[in-house]
Amino acid sequence: MKSTNLKRSIALIMGVLLVLVAVLPAFSAGEARVFVEYRPGTRGAVQSALQGAGAEFHYNFERLGSFVVSVPEKALDGLRHNPNIVSIEIDPVRELVRNTTAPVAESVLPEQVVPYGVDMVQARDIWDANYDLKVDKKAPTGAGRTVCIIDTGFYSEHEDFAGIDVKGGTSQVDDNWARDGYGHGTHVAGTIVAQNNDYGVVGVTPGTASLYIVKIFDDAGAWVSKAHASDLIEAAYLCGDNGANVISMSLSGTNKSGKEEQAFDDLYYNYGILHVAAASNEGIEEYHYPASYDSVISVAALDSSMTVADFSQFNDQVELAAPGVAVLSTVPFLPNSYVQVDDVKYTALGMEFAPMGEVSGELVDGGYCLAADPAADWTGKVVLCSRGEVSFAEKVTKVMANGGAAAVIYNNASGIFSGTLGAEGDWIVAVTISQEDGLFLVGSKLGSLATVANNPVIWPASGYEAWNGTSMATPHVSAVAALIWSWDTSLTNVQIREAMDATAYDLGDPGRDVYYGFGLVQAYDAWEYLGGGKPGKK
Image (cartoon, rainbow, N blue to C red; front, side, top):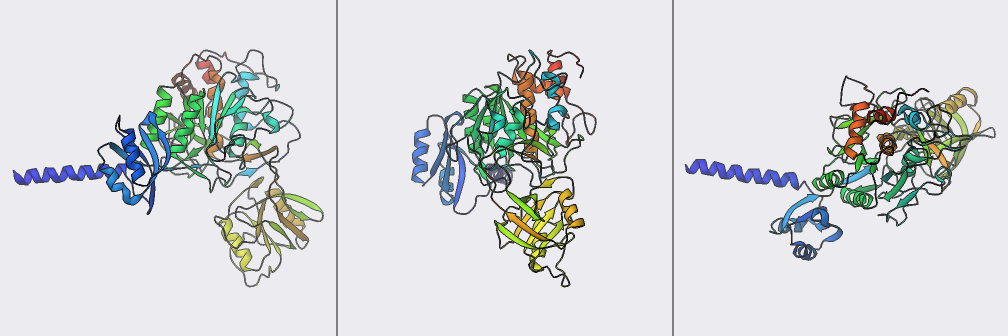
């Protein structure tokens, strides 16, 4: 009997330890940023305990009964034994999910272009049935619905946002939500709401839905800028408190947060808000968050042929798919880098972490720039490298090993692209150019004097680029939700979600699958499902 009781006691202790491990993952040495949930009526006592432990306070979420603090790791054991503390949970990182190999289109468009995604999701079948780029009378347009974008901010002076109904909350990084020093939020916004005019692009809703902007990422960019789940919770509640109907989140993180899930459930079921988030860009099965919470629509990325992108996350939480490859939209800058040969300038983009500057030298062909070749004397020369086979950093390293003064990497598919060297280092000037320009230079201009200029972009300015990512797919779904919801604002978020799921264009395996979810979101079919549309003719 004693042996049995002892075994039961050991099992109970092990069970408790497993629960603690699940709630309290390993913290980095020194300090941990955590949610601390307190028992009802004990907020003041727990606040005093945290102050005594040397905590730095970030948020007090009364709706979640929790503080968010950074606290010395050595203080955690004592806090865990505080009878007024229910749980302690890590506050995980959240990041932007723009793909790092995004192709780029012309920065200045001579006339308005309809991005392929607008028609692929059937947006104009609702508001421009004859495709004459005029909004049909009495057609639903997204007006009366508010999409909240949680991102890098919003360039309010962009030419394609003139007259847009937009408001914003207090920025969590620089107190100016109407400033976007990186461009990710502005790109997302253009897909949703770019104006129907004579220039630039047009959004899924043609300048008609309202926006609410909350900025949680700074200007460092998709490979550096980070926030936390607590920042996202604060932003989401700010959206809810300011009348958002849809929250659009082109961001993700690998670690689940119980408090974050609780917040999104609250906003979904009690506030009636529809949440849409990027599935993420690692091209693996792993869940990312917030997309993989049940109260959030997880969005996969497709190319123009309706094929899932190789970078798009796949798992059983993927719910809908939308255009996410070479999506043309608004950005708050114009590129200012180039490769000049015989007085002709070819548009270039500086590689991330490459130094700014201007270098001239004889233009030579380095092939794929795979390995240092003792026979190749590239000293002081500008080396053309074809994209492919190895990383950009490896290519530039090989150019440097052979004495090259600058590396110019041209695309292996149509268009230009942006890329990264991965980390700061003692790099040479390195830029990217389009496949078309690269092949022309290799075929006609080898031996000529080339000047490579890596200059800062012109910012702020009204520009346009085509980017890749589940980040770019997400606003298509957010905008479709606003578009069909504007037809009848008495509908609930659950009804809008059910309509989009039920009418998605089935792709991949029959029925819902891990790559496409229910399929490509279809605005007109969802609208008709809700009772608003009649079979139309283009």
